[in-house]
Image (cartoon, rainbow, N blue to C red; front, side, top):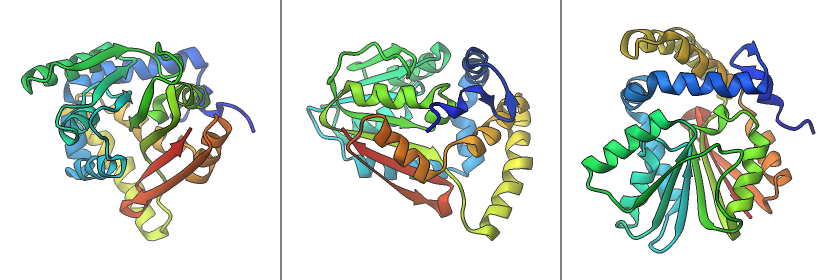
Length: 248
């Protein structure tokens, strides 16, 4: 299997791996302040239901050590916090300082102080081996330059028996739904980006990055190849998104 086949693709453009990392950084620096608003607009609020279902499947518990990767704005981390009544040890990491600042500001507004915020690349996490019980990444894996490296890092920092959970856009199988979804993605999402976030190009990249993301069965196997002992997935909303779960 070719490792990290996405590393030279920025949407539909061919780039070097370093260029991709910098371009993705630029995308999220541009949209950080309007990221959550755009999520509501693009999904008509359904992203909140997806994230709630994600947390329900994870069922985080008090006392667990949880790492939320690419979680800058805190959407998933705050759900972990609420589900555990603030009694889990939660660390948020993100490669983008602008996104982390949004999350820290939101945490301040919610009076949440016992949460760690770490600027880090998912491919080279600054954490010890076997440190966490749960690793989550929501709508972030497709933006990683070397996905297989990030999966291996996830396996490394998880304790034996630890769980990996990924919520990510996937691929619609029903041809009728796919046609409607593709039309919406091609026209309306970039338009929303242009009008609301003042950044059409970043949301054009979003659409293209979803289509470039590995198919579900392929990602399932790549998790096994990265060192997980078992891997499964389930889809929601006709396959628009999928939750991948794996065990070290």
